[in-house]
Length: 213
Ligand code: SAM
Image (cartoon, rainbow, N blue to C red; front, side, top):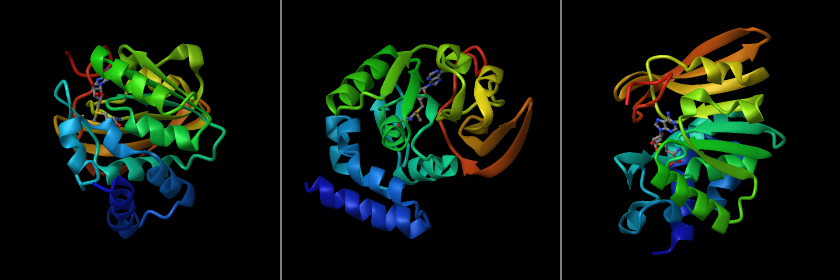
């Protein structure tokens, strides 16, 4: 299979075709080899217009959702970003192409280990994979210009809001099991503005400030 061509077609049909234009983001999507982030048996579908299983009952998000959420953060290149839900590491790699430092947290030890190994092999020295409960955030590296949560819960974990810098943005699917709305929060001093963006379907965010495990 010609993965480079599959990637070009994915970008043309699924990403540009749905209105995403940011040139840096399009370049990042062309650079990151998505097929390496899915299990071998799924490689033939890596560039399909859908999420895919990655083991442990978890998924890598649909390419368009990755692109859409990333575009909303409008990264310029000098930011420190926190991602909750490393999963395959694909979203982290896209963020790693667009911002200065990425911290990403995964609760499943095996997924965290696999993602860390692959990201190191691909040379992403600016991406740091942490294993643990992402609902607590990572105060030692805060504040963050952006926090992206790629799993859903009924409310946004308070520690993640507290770890945003002034003007920083948080993006998270909020709602019940597999029926949520993507919310964009922005910090202004001690206040937050919030916008509901679009309906989405993500796996649950488990942990102390998420759903019960
Ligand atoms: N961003 C991922 C990617 O690019 O492959 C996809 C993420 S997947 C939809 C959601 C991930 O969130 C799962 O791997 C799941 O184990 C993880 N997760 C759920 N609750 C978590 C928590 N409290 N802390 C860290 N990771 C969590």
